[in-house]
Image: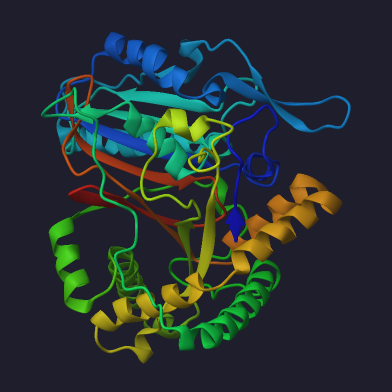
Length: 432
């Protein structure tokens, strides 16, 4: 399933309408952890002078055109007091106590919908020291504003290198380093294989979104309204060097290793709760970018309307349906990585995401944006988890000379119990 927007403009894109409807309301959380306490006045100044100018959508609301009810972005005056929140808790408590306050606070704000009468974002300044940081900034950004690439790119554009603030952050290339097949005799077999995979994936996507649900397991209740319930966020820290060691040993990609680890951990957890779940049907939606670019572009390039090569602000991603391998069929933990690699390679040769994009356009035409949103809602609800990752900088980051010790993100508001995300700097934390 693919979602795409053609840059920023006055009309709200179809994708923006799908993610901000009576059926779906999805937001992205980005969390910045700092080594030193946060200065309130300094943070407000940065929001006013650095964050707001990034994109006109941060100063706009969605309105309906009276003539045809089409959604438009309309610029409005931004009152920071409506968007910036500083919670107050008892002072002089232990970091462990503030961990509990932080968890409760982020769970509460995750359950609240962003008001439609003002721009669709909030920033929360948690000034108390937790076991992870001396202070924390929480960005809540509606998915209608853009996808993870756009919004995290906007956030990263506000940051600098901690060692040399005059130097912009650097990122690893996003281009695949794997071998490319060029043998002419393989073109015809690959074409027919791609056609078969496309038909198979598109048919399965329709069935999965409308009729076929995952089994009810310890990670999927199957009940309605899970998106409105309180959430719990858990983090794990990994070393990228260890991930690269597995990658190089097996000759796969970092994404293959990440997905394999998640598959293995998911099955282990499910088996610990109930042994029968090791053989139950469980599907993961893996998000991948559909931008034809090799890394982050500048914010100016992202929002430039006439630059076809670099225009990339918006929602440009697709879902891959991957069945989580059953424990009864795999004995070696590394086989979970091999299975992930094999499935992702096959899915990437499929054009089903483009057919699904066409289907959403048809649904929008005949049933309106709510009809297309309902289809996406079914895709999410009938699966068990979503996996996403975003590339991170290779050096230590800072915001206005304040060193950042942690950066992670997640999505809330989807009809799913589990969302697992991986930012990827040199050392990164999984956020579920």
